[in-house]
Image 1 (cartoon, one colour):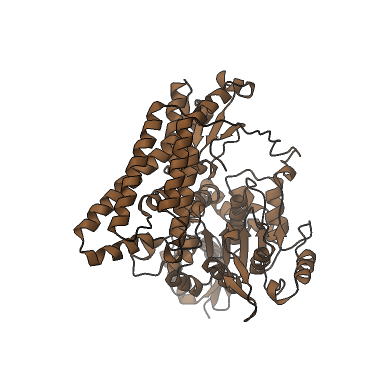
Image 2 (cartoon, rainbow, N blue to C red; image 1 turned 45 degrees about the vertical axis):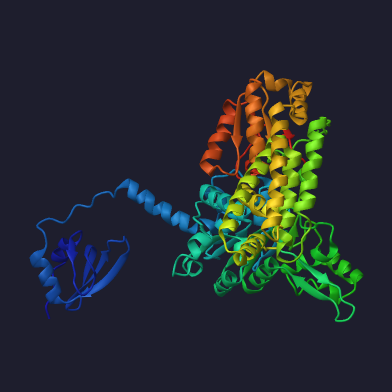
Amino acid sequence: MKTFDKSLLDSLVGSRVRLPGHFEGQVVIESARALGSGVEIRVRLASGHLDEAVLSSDDVAGLLETRPGEPETLRPVDADKLRLLVESARVRLAYTYDRQFAVSLSGIRTLPHQIEAVYLKMLPQPRLRFLLADDPGAGKTIMAGLLIKELKLREAIETCLIVVPAPLTIQWQDEMMRFFGETFQIIHTGNDQQQLINLWQRESLVITSLDYAKQDDVRERIWQQRWDLVIIDEAHKCSAYTKRSASRGDEVDKTKRYQLAEKLAAADNHLLLLTATPHHGDEDRFNHFIRLIDPDLFPEPHKVGEEAVKLIRREILRLGPDCPWALRRLKEDLRDMDGNRLFPDRHCHTVTFKLSREEFDLYKAVTSYINEFLPQATGKRKNSVALARTVFQRRLASSTRAIHESLLRRLKKLQEIDRELQDLPPAQRGKRLAYLQGRITDIEQDEDDLDDEARDHLLDETTTAQGLDQLQAELAALSELEARAAKVRARGQDSKLSALKECLTEAEFQELHDGRGKLLIFTEHRDTLKHLQEHLKSWRFAVCEIHGGMNPRERKKAQEEFRTSAQICVATEAAGEGINLQFCHLMINYDLP
């Protein structure tokens, strides 16, 4: 039996060798001892781990013949690589000792009420069914992002679906990426319908709009996927109500939004509903809404007595510190880390003004036009006409420029339609008008669900004309009305604007003139925004603008301009989406809320 001298075996220690059949790649021999006719060795692998093997006498003889003249000198490892190795292990296991690890990784400064909601209310639940109903401004998007990040770090979720109103999709995508490093894919008709692959199946982190997701062909593909976490923003838009019937019994009428949310809630593991207005004073709709949380806990209101529903809801949905299903905090109750109120008291008052005779006559003329040519409709046209009436009336109340520009755009568009109809055979004209009248048939949409472009499109093309003669009659009235509005606008006698100018001279706005204060003016319409911006600049104010047509980068740039140099920012509702204007404490709402 062949044996090996200890000094020969010691000479192998420290050698970097290859041992095919035992290990892949090179290994470093840490120790060697005789074992019968062979040798037992301990080696360090390339990964840094230790391992053992028993070599035959032939293997050892081969090693002795090919070993280097001197053992390889051990060198210190690269310090940066060692630090990365240790850091990767720490990050991988961090959630086991840092219960708020997502806070450490995110680019935000969290507030006590946000920590309470995510770490004390939501995360302890093995199957989350939760309604977060804090006041606007509490940071519900931030809390949702913290929840997503923490659940991913704990490997509790892989797929997440966020369903939001269409105007908020970009804001959600931006905040998830910017604050939490999570890349969500927005799925909409532009990228979903133009591809053969199923994006809902391919993507694990998805944002989509509520009104796109509810469509029959889309929702079926959404329901087919397994979503570990579903978040629905502005969840109160998912509504159902009891349809009373003396003959057939009461039934539930569920909107498509509600049907989408109901099936997602029933099929998926975790559900988070976000809304600042869960209750609109309609007990029946609210009772149906909270059934999305858990239909086994909350009964259908039409199947039990009204008092029983109230009792069950009051006992189960206690919005106190121990409620596991819902959380609601008012602005007045929110505090920072030092216990100071986040939102100071608001002091507001209404500035009244009186329309001039010409403005009042224009107001009455536009109202008469709306009532005559956009009367309340039924059937397919009902929602289109109702929305058009609402947009018209709001622009009429906003500014002379807004209503004039709206009338002018509508006049030009209807003139195009008139020319198009005249080129069509008589038999085709009615079909073309019917198509225009029924294009927006989604009865669940209201004005807040439309962006500026969609509102303009609605206002420009909605008509109740049944034939070419009726359309031409409307064109004649509209042409006269547009000319009248142009005259009022040209005279420059804007009573509302004059009231604003006088308001800016009052004591509350004195700090605006010496550079200490900042003023934010809200308006609903882009035309009014331009109108205000032009006049404010003529009054020697430094002005910037923020509106829905700007991308997140442009909004951030405008925010910085407002913070550093501009005195006044004129903005639409886009100013409330994903940017911080808390350095400004003076605000004017130029349009009626």
